[in-house]
Length: 403
Image 1: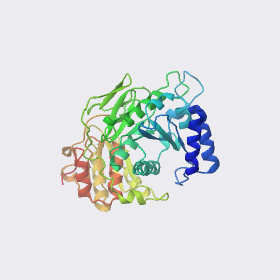
Image 2: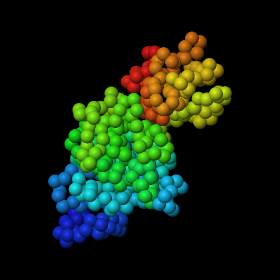
Image 3: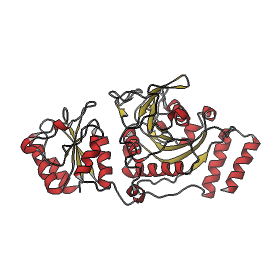
Image 4: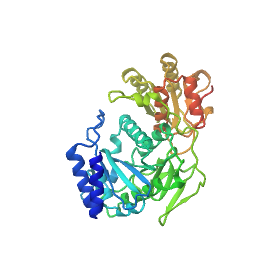
C-alpha cells in the first residue's frame, strides 16, 4: 500500500491528465492483485478499486459503489431506450464527468455489474457491509451507489433499515442507456456526488437522487416504467431539488424515520456467509377469482417463513383466502403482512380480517408497499422476533397489529 501511495504522488507531480491517471492506476491494481477479492455466491466478478486524484486534497472524500443497471448500459441506437445491456463500468462513467473533481476526491469500486432485476439479498447485504466497512475506516465523508432503477427502492429501504451513520448515502441510476440522446445517467451521478459531499445532507439517512429530485430512502418508489421523472414520494413529499448546481432542501432540518437504522446493530447480518440466504418471504398478488391453492403450494413446497399479501383496495383479501391463511398461520406460526397492490394509500389495523377470520399472525403493513414490507419482515425473521415484536415494529410505519 505504501508503494501504491508513492505511485499516486508521482503521477500527481508529473501533471498527467485524470484519464491517464485512471488507466494507469487501474492497470496497476489489476496487475499487482491489490484489489479485494471477497467471494459471495451471488457475485462472480472480481472487485477493483480505483482512486480519482484531485489537486485539492481538502475536498470531501466520496466513495462510489457501482452495481450496474441502466446507468451502466448501452444499446444499438441513439433513439432506442429498450433492449440495451449492462456493459459499462464505473470507470466509463467517471471518465466522462471531469466536473466531479470540482466537488470531491472520489474513490470508486465496481462491486458488481448486473441489472437490478438480478440483485438478490446477498448482493444488498454485501453492499451494506462494504459501505459500513468503508465508513468505519474514517476515510469518506459520504457514499454514492449507482444502481438499476427497477429494484433501487428495495436496496435503499434495506440500507436505511440496516445502517445508522451520519454520513450521507445517496443512491442513483438512470432511465435511459448511455447510448441514448437523452441519457440522464451522468447528470444523476454528478448531482448524487454533490449531495453526498454536502454538509447539509449529514444525518439525513439514505437518499435517492434522480432527475433533480432528492427523496427519502424510506419512501422512494419507482412510479413509471419509462419516464425520467419516475421516483416519487407522492404522499410524503420530496425532500429537496437540485437547481442550477445548488441543493434546495424543502425539509431544512435533518430527519430520520423511526425505523431508520432499526437493524443497524444486528450481529446476524455481519455473520451471514455466502451460503446463507435471507428467510423466504413470498409476495402473493390479489385479483378477482384468486386461486387460494397458490398459498398452500407456496407454504408446502418453498420453505416459506412469512407471507406478504399485495391485496386489493386497502389490503382486502378473499374470505376463502383469509381462512386458508388463518389455518396456516395458526399451525405453522407464519406471520402474514397485509399490504396493497395500489400505488398509494395505507393498510390500517381496521382492515385486518375480523370475526371468524381473525388470527394472531395477521399484521397490517401500513404505508409500506409489498416489496418493502417483505424486506422489513425478512429482517424481523432473521432476528427471530415473535409475532408480537414484529407487530410492534410494523406499528412504527403506521398500522401494525392488534397487539
